[in-house]
Image: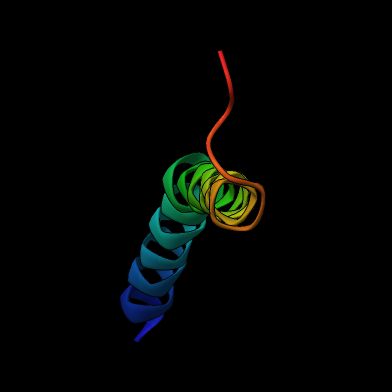
Length: 52
């Protein structure tokens, strides 16, 4: 029974590392990039393409 607790802690630590090292940065890049794309597209739709 004591071994299960150790396995749970190892598994929990792996999930924590995955979330902090991979998922959080990836999610922030997707959110910021998506917002920037949305703003850019809305400017093209509402004000027209940039004039050269």
